[in-house]
Length: 230
Image (cartoon, rainbow, N blue to C red; front, side, top):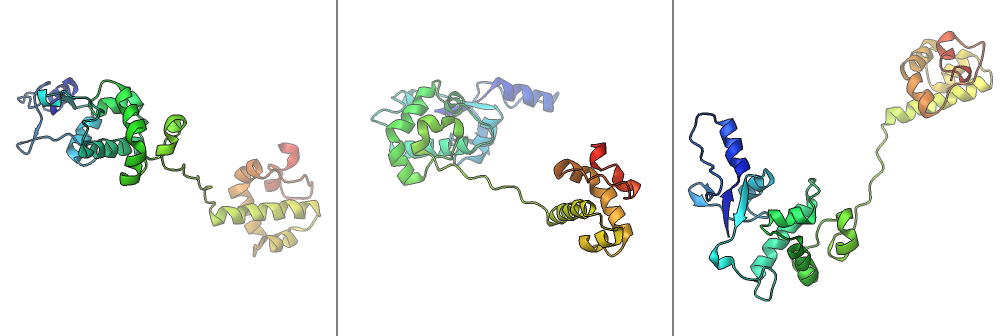
């Protein structure tokens, strides 16, 4: 199997280097540093980068004409294909099985499916499981890693403190406390700090925690966040 340039590679090169001789003629063999580019998604970074950009494809040579997943497949070939599948399963591109097969140089997704079902148990033990992919779990879960538990997003300590102060403010207004008492309960040194806090964070806190209870004696800067205005 050899690697050749695609029409996309030829077109992209022409658009990037107008007027220059095109070194990436579609259908011609790919050379890198004067050497034939090897087919390997897992171990050849150059091939992997070119393949993901759609610049290269593989074509069979006479020596490749034998069953893709039959009895004659070698251990090295199994390892190479499994490593490639691990990279494709882990990719953020969300490849379909058919697209994975194309990346690996096959026309049919059945080739990939047979590889997983026929050799998956052995390959998992030798080279590790496939990364978890929810869309394939129905068919290949026994060959994949366990799904990762999503961690709840961390809340900034400052946000937690703001939330706590807003709840104190709600409670104190209900108890009809004076502003000086409210400021002390909220941990503010001055009444003006209460005003600054309400003006800076009132919009968010009203939406996330709830409006302030109505009180005609509280200052106007609070009234816009009170319940009767909600």
